[in-house]
Amino acid sequence: AQKVTQAQTEISVVEKEDVTLDCVYETRDTTYYLFWYKQPPSGELVFLIRRNSFDEQNEISGRYSWNFQKSTSSFNFTITASQVVDSAVYFCALLDPGANSKLTFGKGITLSVRP
Amino acid sequence: GAVVSQHPSWVICKSGTSVKIECRSLDFQATTMFWYRQFPKQSLMLMATSNEGSKATYEQGVEKDKFLINHASLTLSTLTVTSAHPEDSSFYICSARQPGEQYFGPGTRLTVT
Image (cartoon, rainbow over all chains, first blue to last red; front, side):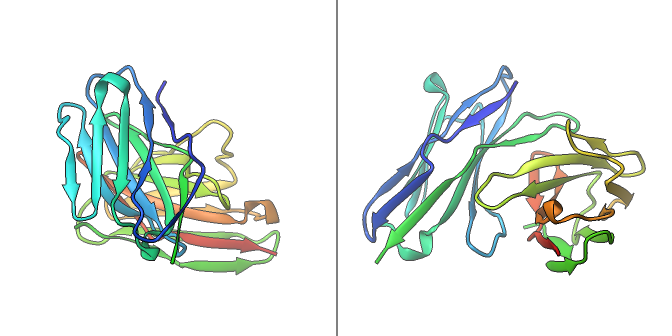
């Protein structure tokens, strides 16, 4: 069975602080995809990144960076120099490929960035 | 990127009535669409998987007679909440699948009074 654990439920930081959101996953598949989504108060899910299981390179996109480590089954997300607009719920998700494969979501982390 | 729309974005209905929510993939054909439900401060829970031209596959605990799903074309899936009750009030999100990608609609907020 697949499982995504986001142990942190709520994080509050002051603007300009760096913050790391943790994600640990479980799967028996050797091929899979990992995602991060942002859900602002409006509710619409915003896609942030997709990483396949064969690509362990870390990725940086502006203030965002992701650290994928298969050895620890983790896919952590770091926001550098956080801003108030980063306040949202962040979901990590796992997808196994194949017909009708399902996206498994973690419980989400509520990030509050205070001015 | 691919766009998925939902209509309506919000709806208020009376208990006992039925509500239909549409999900459209605007610039691609989606053989598979998914319906999720999200209660306040909770994660997205998959309700059902919808394949074009065939019956939907419901997750355990989801009543198929209450949540009717129709995937009539490669760009449209509908979710009908029949005989809605206040406990059905939730945020309903659809998504459409392309190989290796899954695109989400903006969601529909349903309030049953």
